[in-house]
Structure formats: C-alpha cells, structure tokens
Image 1 (spheres, rainbow, N blue to C red):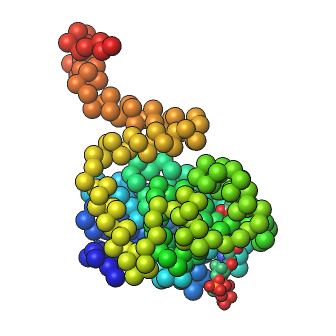
Image 2: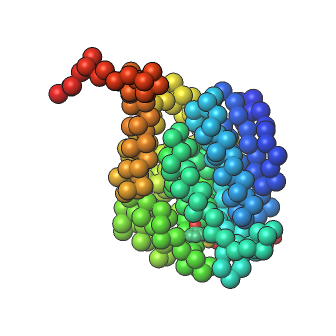
Image 3: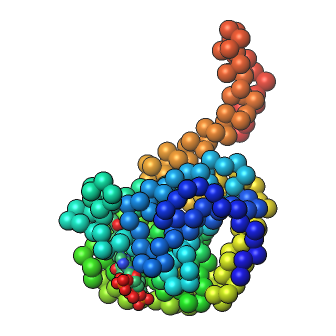
Length: 273
Ligand SMILES: CC(C)(COP(=O)(O)OP(=O)(O)OC[C@H]1O[C@@H](n2cnc3c(N)ncnc32)[C@H](O)[C@@H]1OP(=O)(O)O)[C@@H](O)C(=O)NCCC(=O)NCCSC(=O)CCC(=O)c1ccccc1C(=O)O
C-alpha cells in the first residue's frame, strides 16, 4: 500500500521515475522477466539516478523493482551474447558495472526496497545500495557460477565486507538462495517487514533521513565508502572536502581577491589546532 502521492516523470521504456516529498523512486519495470536488466534498462537507470542526483529537492532515493515477485533477477540471459548483453545497437555490454559505480558515488542515500528475488546481478545492485529494506517474501543470492558469470568487483568484495569472507564465499560458491530472515541474520539487509508494509516502512526510513543534515549524510556516505573504494573513494571524499572549502569565507576571499585584482587577505582566518 502506497503512503505517498508519487509524481511520475521522464519518458522511459524499461523503468519508472517518480518523486514525492524529497524522495525519488526509481523502479525497474520488466516484471515479465523478473525485472532482469538489459542495456536499455541500465542506460535509463543511469539517466534517472543522474536526474535524482541533480534535483535539489531530492534528498534520498528508493531503488526497487515492479511488482512483488522480484527486485531484479540480474542480466537478461535471453539477450546475452558472447561478449555481454546485446542492446538495440547490436553491441555487447556489461554496463551494470557503470551503474554500480554511479550508486556508490551518488552523494545521497540510496535505499534498495526489495520484494521477491534479488539474485545474480540484481543481488549485487542491492549490495551497492546504502540500505536495504526487505519484504518478508524477499529472496537473495548469486547465480553466476550456475549460468556462466561472476562479479569480481563490488559483487565479491563489497559482499564480503557486508557479510564476512566465509559467508560471501558460501553465497558465490554454492549459489544457494536465502530468505529474508536469513539475510537479516547475516547483516545483508537492514530490516524485514511484511510485504504489504514494504513501501510504507521504506518511506518512513527515508523521512527519517530527510530530517537529518544533508551535508552530514553526504560526508558519511563518502567516508564509509572511501575505505573500500581506495583511491577512487578518496577522490570522491576529497571532492566533498573541496565543496565544503568552496563554501567557506576563507576560500571565497581567494576567489574575490582574484576577481578584484588585489592580494588576498587570509589574515582574519584562524589557524586552528
Ligand atoms: C529469478 C528466478 C529465481 C525466478 O523464478 P520464478 O519465480 O520461478 O520465475 P521464472 O518462471 O523463472 O521467471 C519468470 C519469467 O522471467 C524470465 N526471467 C527470469 N529471470 C530472467 C533473467 N535473468 N533473464 C531473462 N529472463 C528471465 C523467465 O525466463 C520467465 O520467462 P519465460 O517467458 O516463462 O521463460 C528465476 O527466474 C531465475 O533464476 N532467473 C535467472 C537468475 C539469473 O541467473 N540471473 C543472471 C545472473 S548473471 C548476471 O546477472 C550478470 C550481470 C552482469 O551483467 C554482470 C556483468 C559484469 C560483471 C558482473 C555482473 C554481475 O553478475 O553483476
């Protein structure tokens, strides 16, 4: 049951983009294929996540799948060619990797709202989100070694960081599926709620985050991700530090002095211990 009056926008084929109350909701809309993604889906998702990033009214993003059967079942195996997933241009792509990086770098919390299956590349997508709210019918797992695929990036080491090395190996090597309670027990999701309360609970978590300082949340996301993203994570975090510096009078004195063709006077700014 929806507790929000969503406003739909954008002209998409495979996804739905909606906003309300400072929340953007991005939905993979291919329920007939358990929300498997193809190149078009991923290009549209990238476009929508970018729109949510740029929209100053949006503070938090929900990522979900249409219907109650699946969040996402990974790459669409029916259009998988010999070197990736084939789009309308006939080119093979693995462009889900670009989306994973985009979600990690996006300076607003992204919440995976999972009903039904989150498996294969769809499982990796919830892993890269900041939080996961699961319905009690949710099912999690990796299938790569069964269908001739693997994710050696975030899908491997971020999963290991999330649930521990032994459990991550089990998930990948055995390709078992895990129910929502098992996922909660291993720290793979934040909470489990009855399916009919999934959106209501997810929106409540979003509202609580929207009450908080956006810059503090941005810095925390950058800080938490920097540890595991190495130089790329530090680059993101350093960019956030530069943003904060730009917003200071001290940095603005340097800019203003240049524009006014005078020597900058930084003497009034403290040298803090
Ligand atoms: C998800 C299932 C367990 C659901 O089972 P069930 O509820 O019984 O429904 P079905 O009858 O099986 O499915 C209904 C309908 O949907 C079609 N379908 C389901 N999943 C897919 C899919 N992934 N691709 C294409 N079609 C799908 C299914 O065929 C049915 O349609 P029909 O017309 O009746 O045929 C179950 O469906 C299932 O196990 N699905 C497959 C899960 C899977 O193995 N996914 C692929 C994993 S590999 C991957 O995702 C690669 C991702 C990637 O791009 C990548 C690239 C580079 C590095 C890493 C990665 C990465 O792995 O992330």
